[in-house]
Amino acid sequence: GPYFITICAHDQLRMFGRIVDSRAELGPLGHMLDREWRTLPNAIEGLRLDEFVFMPNHMHAILWLPGMGPDGSPNTISLHMAVQRFKSTASTRFLQARKRAGLPRAQHGIWQRGYYEHVIRVDDELDEIRRYIVENPPNWEADSLFRRMEVKSHAARPLPGGGDHPGSTRQ
Image (cartoon, rainbow, N blue to C red):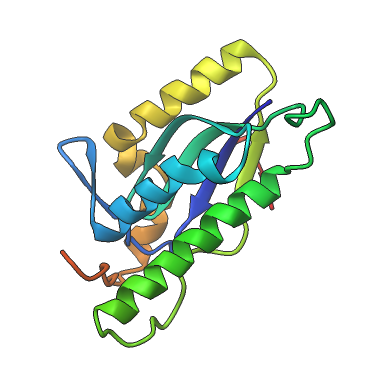
C-alpha cells in the first residue's frame, strides 16, 4: 500500500537546493538525491514511486510497497528497509563525490536520523497528500521546517560541481 514519508537533512540544514519563484530549484546534492530516489525501484522489486519533492532541507514522497513478492509469497520489503536503502546509497554517493573532488570528509552526513511516515488508507487522503506535495514549494515559507531554519543560520556545503505532519509517526 501507499506510504507518505518525510526525510529531513542533518540538522535540517538547507543542503538540497532552494525555492525560487515558488519552485524547488535543486543544487548539486539535490540533483544527486533526485537521481538516487528515481532509481530506488530498480533496487527494490515491486516498489513504486508516486509524487515526491525535494525541498531545501527535506523531502516528501509517496511510495507504494508491493503486497506480494514476484513468486506470490508475502512481501518481505518493509518501509524502513526501503528508506534505509535510499539514505545509505545516497550517503555513499555523496562521500564518493567528495572524495573524487579531493574534498575532506564531511563533518556530518546528509540525513537526520529516522524519518516520518504515515500510512495512506483511503483515496481521498492519497489525493490530499499528493496535492500537499505539489503545493509544498509555493508554501515553503509557511512550512514548519522553514520556520525552524530561520532560527538556525547554518550554511550548507554543496556537492562539488556546481514536517512534521498530523498523523505521522517518527521512525
